[in-house]
Length: 230
Image (cartoon, rainbow, N blue to C red; front, top):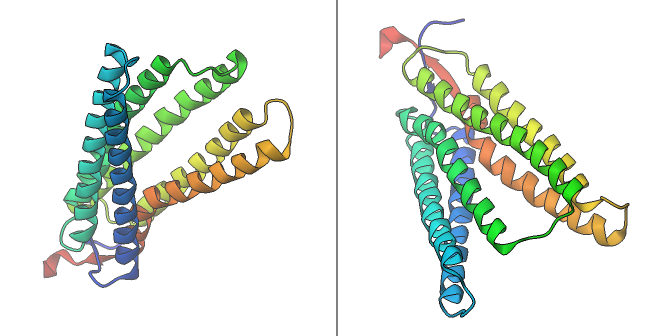
């Protein structure tokens, strides 16, 4: 292993891909904010909306704004990654907290809507979902810590970040596939079940790629800068 600190090449294709994926994440976050705004507007004119539902709408809107702010910060971190990895690192460290708030807000909203799912299916999905959430949150935290350690020169093996980001992408792909199979095919395989299942899988796979591609491609474009030349 060579001595020195890792840095991202400014004109590398990996950095460009990371920026594009961060832009797509920001666009997704903006659509979420737009959806929350529409939900709030329609809710304001609905007579049957309870105080609890109004509170949930406000909480969802606030969480959506926080996630959008995070997406902006992550994009900024990707843009300036050739100068410093500090911002992209902190963006990944902070995200697990925001994501947990988002999941709690969504759970509360679904609870108030009294969405019905079969007890056995709900238990299976929730059990797998809890484990999945814990693993993914720890992975995001680990990726952020690795970024910060790269920035401080504590680590200089770019393969660590590549393996970590690629590994968690493969993990969530497998887990999400299992969850969709449990959800869409509880009674058997039919055309009406398979089509939405495949559609949901493709959307989720694309979303996961956009989420985990920036650290992988940034790591791919990293080189070691000799400390004597810095």
